[in-house]
Image 1 (tube, helix red, strand yellow):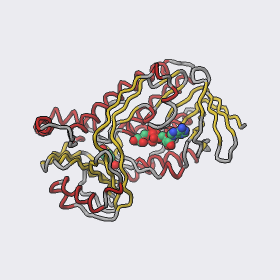
Image 2 (cartoon, rainbow, N blue to C red; image 1 turned 135 degrees about the horizontal axis):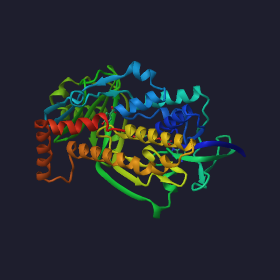
Image 3 (cartoon, rainbow, N blue to C red; image 1 turned 180 degrees about the vertical axis):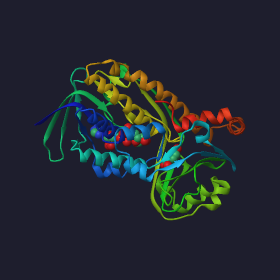
Image 4 (cartoon, rainbow, N blue to C red; image 1 turned 135 degrees about the vertical axis):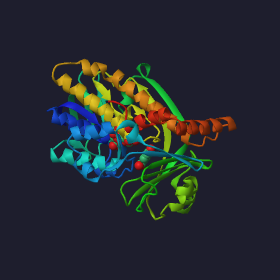
Length: 390
Ligand code: APR
Ligand code: PHB
């Protein structure tokens, strides 16, 4: 048995765990990360690519934003389209802030490279972590790929292990409250080396279904179409994807440059929150505690907000003050619920629901027309899109 002693054991080396370990390191606080899968697998994940202002601040605080600053694409607007009518919301004009396009995969790569540069211990390929003593002095027991047994003795444990992790499950059911909404559709995403069809991110509600046009650079686009819950990627030959995408994007669809898919994947949509976000000396951050539908690109941004808050609370703990840790769950949840609301609102507005009556379809159209006519409504969307105060 190899025994490790550290201030904070972090379960999960996705964006949340990696950013937390980086911020703690800068404050002289030690951590060890335990990751179920491989470094390559973590870096193979294609996720969203829109960063809000708090995420830019968090990555700058962490000192990992050099490439981001060199490669960022600033957007000063976001476009909503509804059955061919197009509304560009001037988010920068309304809030004074931009959003930045920079792929989550690149954020994760920057964080992994920073961790390796500082000699951070990341135990990759360890799928069998067992947690104990969460209310006193957390222990993590695991087997390394070579079969060696490890034990981590920590003061605190950060659950950054995502929706399918073990940390949230370690909270006794009687002490947890779960709130969940599954949506009757998924998103089929496609990555292509062609210039993006629009200079902004475009969310389109069309009678045939939702579509989204985004990008990773001036030459690489990320497109999505709403798919049925049971759909698999095999059900969507590329020709079918392009036909649906071009139709749903209306006039913009006529300008789409089609090319071979570099990647196609389907993701289900759900809203999910588990309260509280702490149990004894364990603190949850990111997808381990909550999930938002990707409409509004809040997943990574919400995770970063949790991590920044948790890192500050742990720094105060290291200085002898427990107040930040005691307040963490309630403070994090206050912001989580506001972001859950915005993601749910935009999902409800921009998708075709199979259960919607003619009345509810009219309500969607009326909401879009109201937004188009109301600077106040556009400001609501803009301030949520660029990111709420931290
Ligand atoms: N032991 C160790 N690691 C685990 C375990 C486990 N039992 N279970 C899951 N993990 C790892 C996963 O392999 C993954 O690498 O935890 C990590 C969790 O990372 P994410 O799921 O990316 O969650 P998070 O870091 O909170 O980032 C949230 O990533 O998934 C997107 O949409 C999400 O944009 C959001 C962001
Ligand atoms: C993306 O660029 O992948 C993206 C953009 C906006 C979203 C979701 C995903 O709401």
